[in-house]
Length: 80
Image (cartoon, rainbow, N blue to C red; front, side, top):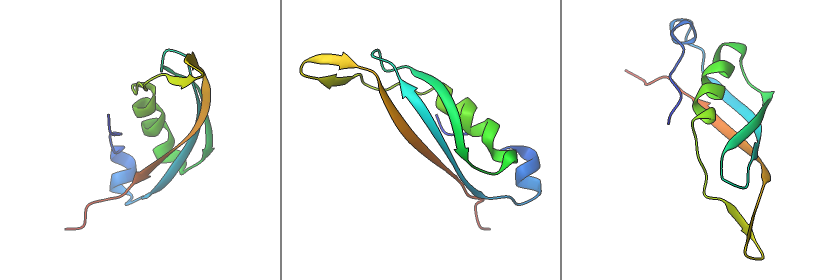
């Protein structure tokens, strides 16, 4: 799911990148999100979007393992 652009950020014409670090469980679920960088008005929308994501389990030697991943979300306003 793509993040919903926060209304206040849109009104203020704020664009930018939010970088999150997340643990992905053996089942492919997003856990333990941590903000690495991003504009304060965009961070919560990024977190809410990533919390809904599901990954295919990462396999190592035939077994599912948890991993740490960095996720980058780009918030850009459409040019009219």
